[in-house]
Image: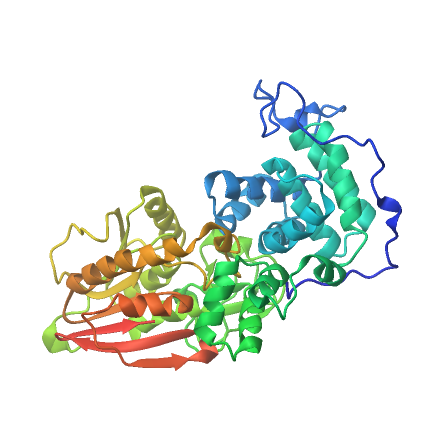
Length: 487
């Protein structure tokens, strides 16, 4: 993976090879394969001292990995909540974040290395996640090898019981005998014979995604393909969307927070509401409603909806719709912009829990005039032509936002992407029906979904303009008096 850093220090010796007769690492008799005791007692309570051996940052990262695997949780939503719940801040929060996202990004690479260091075909999921966390520390952070192995053994004892800890110790000591580049020479397929297999292991992707990139970019674009894969593993910058009320004008400095100044950073180039952090914790600003974590491209998609002028002869500009609003980032920005113009936003999502999340986001931002409802965007409860402006941020593969959602690559299969075409078509048709003649409709989607999106728009004539500098595309279309933008 492109973001890995080779650890400094002397070369590791092979003295860490496991001795014959070490424990096999199978869960103790009488326990389910998850390692949880049947009494329901938390594994951490089994330590000799009566408390967890594992430091809070590593335990938080492990718990997020298990939630992602067991109940399809979203790491970018669960981790901040978990850090707040457990009181992790500063370096502990930063370390937990690096462990979580780094391990999710590198899963494919680490699994190939762990397979070479283990004589088992299958591993219990909790043991596997402990090993992945340990491998990430050994191969991609500055954590010392002894500390990485020892803390992983402690974590295994807490979450799996004592017997698997010997297996974890043996495997990770083998991992520690080489750095990442050396392991690639051992576990990655030969690049000349199997280029997709090599790239899949080197950059930690399922093979089908590598093949899709190669097909899209062409066989002559080998460098571009690898660059695109590497870009999905770059650690994302923290970009905030400031409240529209706190930004008087694009040339003005951002308004100070309650403490007197924003954290160190700078205004973004394109969005007048974007602020890129250089360092510091955005949590106080987010909790106060003054800002939200939102990429600049996402902000621009919302802004594009508001920048198209409407002919006053065709109607007023008073009612806006966010059709697929969860989890609320674009709705928050649109709500503030609508209020500034005397308009009102209606935010809708099919899932009640996501609609509640949107409501919470709008309340923190002071969106008192906005309305939130749970409704199926394909069968809307309002009559046609109700809204002056409509945003259709329809579900997509998520493959265009892997920096923020690294686990998405492991959840998707090609059939999932193909099935999205029908859903996107239905939602787009509903969005067009919801906007009045002379109004504006914006449909957003991941850049990587281009081929599927084009298949979804038989009703539209498209003219496309690429804006590479902001990493998203915009298309303006005309249909039956409705200005439709696709970004």
